[in-house]
Image 1: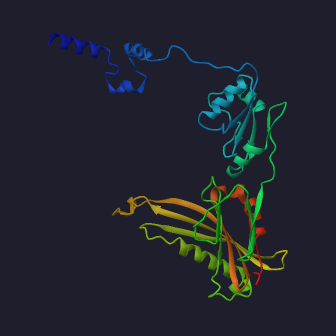
Image 2 (image 1 turned 60 degrees about the horizontal axis):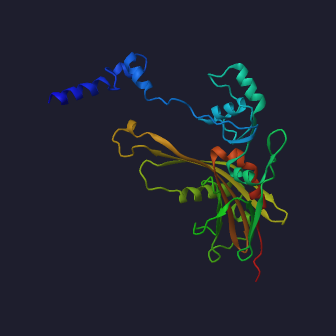
Length: 323
C-alpha cells in the first residue's frame, strides 16, 4: 500500500492538467506546466528545399493553409501561380503580414480565375510552362451537339457534362462537379397535344406563368414547414435561323424549411434557406408537340456560367420527324 501511494503521488506531480480552470486560457500557465508542455514538443522541424527555382501551380491558395503556403513558396524564390475560382481576393494583405512582404508577394504571384466546371479541362489541356512561370492559355469552352432525329430536336451542351439515364426526362445532362447544374428536355405527349405554334401558349408572359406553375407543381413537398418563393425574372420570344418561333422563360425559385418544424412555439420554428436556383426554359413547337429545354443552375454560380448557359439556349432547335 505504501508503494502504491508513492506511485500515485509521483504521477500527480507530473500531471499535465492545470490546477484551475482559469489556467486553461493559456495566459496563466505555471512555470512547471510550461516546462512539462515543452517535453511534448518536437525537437526539430523537417525542412525540404528544392535545389533550383520551380514553377509551382497552387490549386486555390486563398483560404486555410493555401494563403500561407503560397507566400512561403514565393519567399523561397519559386514562381507561383494560383488557380482559383475568383471568389476571394488573391492578393489581400494578411493581418500579420508586413507591407514589404505583401508588396513582394503581390508582384510575384500570378493568379487565374476559372469556373469550377472549366477547371478540370483547363488542368488537363490548357496550361503551358513558359520561361517566366506558369501561364494558363484558356481556350474557348468545348461544346458538343446532341441530335435526336427520332424525336425531332437538337441542342449543344458543355463537353464536360455527363448524361444521366433514368432521370424521367427525354434526355438529361448534368455537370459532374456542380450537381445542381443540369439540363433536361421534356416533350408533350403526341396523343394529348395538338400544338401548331408556340403561340398556342399565349404571349411569352402567359407562357412564363405556365412554366413557373409547372415547376412549383413538380417541387411540391409534403414536408412540414417547407415554403417556396418564386419569381418570373424575364420572358421573351425569338425567331431562330430555322425560321421557327421560340419562347424563353427565366425564373428564380427559393426553398425554405424550418429547422424544427415540430416545435410548438413559432419562435422555435426558424426558417432556413435550403436552396436558391435559377431555371431557364426554351419552348418550341413541332410535330404537333411542345418541346421544353430546361436548364437549372444554383443562383450563386449563375453569373459565372451565364454565357455558356445562354449558348445552350440559343442552340436549341426542333425539327420535323421523318415519316
